[in-house]
Length: 138
Ligand code: CMP
Image 1 (cartoon, rainbow, N blue to C red):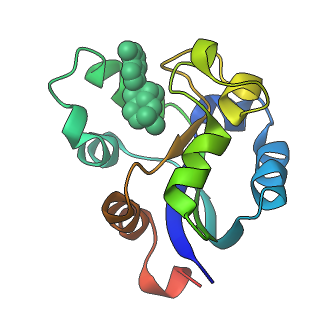
Image 2: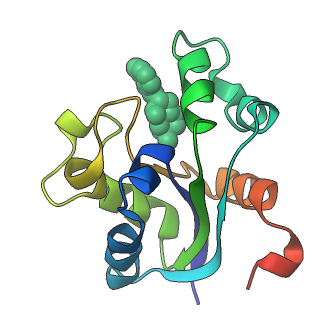
């Protein structure tokens, strides 16, 4: 039991072959996978998913990057899932991420930062339902 968060292994992490290692670190840290798939976002998908960032200077770059190749999307369950997962992945900028965090280990830069984690319970639900139908959530 517990509550849920949503994650995406971003195109750089998937193309470099880190999917298995990252999923192992996630499950080894007490998260249970309750939905999982490899998929690729369309331009419209990425624009919608990141709509909160549409006025930011990096929005176009972010949309291009997130549509550049396959991602791995997942829903994760654990007590205190949102906050504990953000601790596990580390700071947005890998140069500021703590030792041992997923971004410290696998992220190339602030824009190609390997992994996404929801920032609130409300967004976890919105993002989960964006990527997974009800039948795909266990
Ligand atoms: P995330 O926090 O998962 O969602 C928003 C993304 O925007 C973030 O990861 C980064 O990939 C990207 N991002 C945030 N800040 C910058 C920045 N200053 N320059 C480029 N990309 C950024």
